[in-house]
Structure formats: C-alpha cells, structure tokens
Image (cartoon, rainbow, N blue to C red; front, side, top):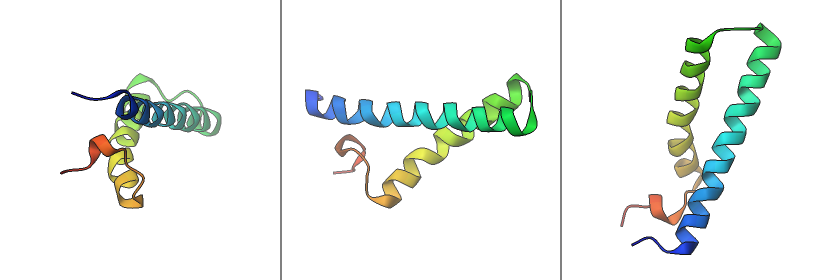
Length: 68
C-alpha cells in the first residue's frame, strides 16, 4: 500500500508535468499560432513520455518510481 508521503511526492511530480505541458503549449501557440488538436496532443504525449526518464536520469524521481 502506498503511504501518504509517497502520494504527496507523486502529486508534486504530476503538478510539475502539468505546468510544463501548459507552458510548452502556450509557447508553441504564441510562436506558431493555432496548430490544431492532433499536434497539441502529440506535443503532450512526447513531453509526458520524456518526463520520467529525464527525472530519473537527474536522480530526482520519487521513491515510488525507484525499482527495489
């Protein structure tokens, strides 16, 4: 069972990825203009897919992501 500390640690990472996605989409919209739903979805998928390996390589992953 996951304890409260692990959940808070995970929640912080999910808030960070939400902020990153929001900022990157805002930058893309301001630079390129309206790119459409599918391009925005592709940007979101790429960012979410790259977040975990990047955080693990920096050694900042939550304890729930560490393999025992």
